[in-house]
Length: 157
Image (tube, rainbow, N blue to C red; front, top):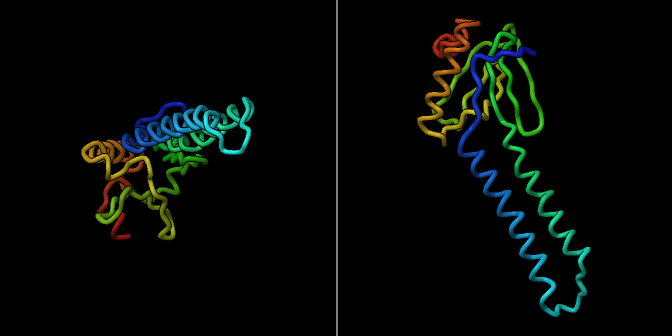
């Protein structure tokens, strides 16, 4: 992998939603841990149970924070897509181009044999930020593989 990247982008709204959801999850689990001790439900809930409620909340929050890993980077080594769980680098020999179909929520990294990967880091819900990110990504790709930066060239393959 390359140490220097010409372009890097992460989705804004998805990141905000993930942080809010994680915080709410922890808050709800803490409140449950406090409230469940007060009433007589027929079940004895002790300190260990309360801590378990809170810990489960933190575990769920950690899972909800996985989208914070999503990003796209373009550099000398190629195009790197990081998803919630896995990161993958495609060298310039494997990159055919980048397209953003009108009906799609995110652009696609076009690969040989008419295969493609969704670029989750650039999302239509981000509006103008997504447009600027797509322009920046195409410019970075143009520096390394000019034919891959033009959507018309990719569409005609």
